[in-house]
Image 1: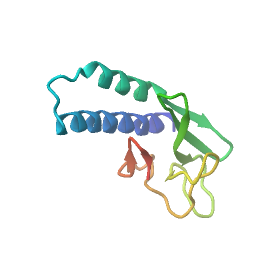
Image 2: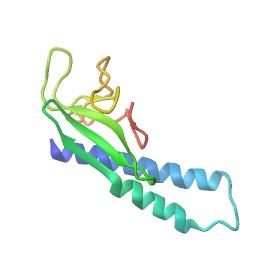
Image 3: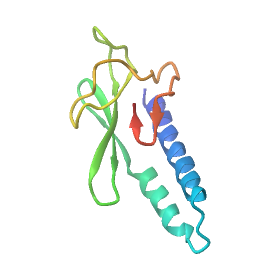
Length: 119
């Protein structure tokens, strides 16, 4: 399961890089320095963390201002509604939204993964 979760983190990192480069080219500024953007990319990529809970793996990120936010949850084991590996959008800091899965890491279905989180 750890390898599949790492694939989710890597998809989030790559999406952030694409978004960063796209947004910087959308409003080109000949005087801008790419150093800050590269630092932001590095901060985001290094700030992703996975915490193991009793029922879910929680994905969080560290913000540049020192705060943290939840990006999503991954089910550790199946229950009545979800299978092991189902990706769930966060409902809050401590719990996922249990309406429906946004993909499954074991199936390789990472379509619901963005840099902003699982959703």
